[in-house]
Length: 102
View 1 (tube, rainbow, N blue to C red):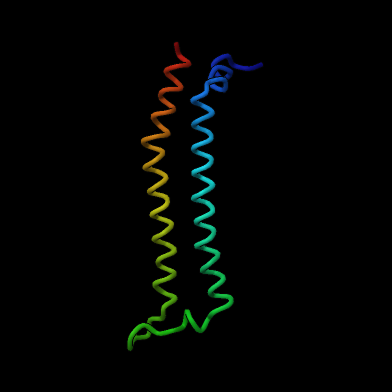
View 2: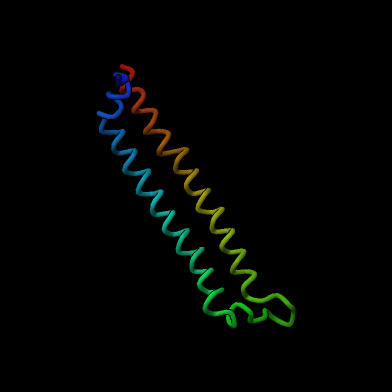
């Protein structure tokens, strides 16, 4: 048993546009996050002397700001996705629902 509203949504070209855009952007951000995270892990595994290089005369090494950069990068790409979801994706969703409810 299928709901006729669901069938109309799935037949709507804007729904397919929304899915294509959302999935493509999601995979792009996922790839970037994996590159940054696993790049940092690879540095830890294969170039410890570089990460242990001290910054200035203190005890802080270069690995600390790079690790913090990974965390900041995560927050930034999350904010980018939320901003796009709240503008473009919500607009497309509203248009789909408007078209289907006619």
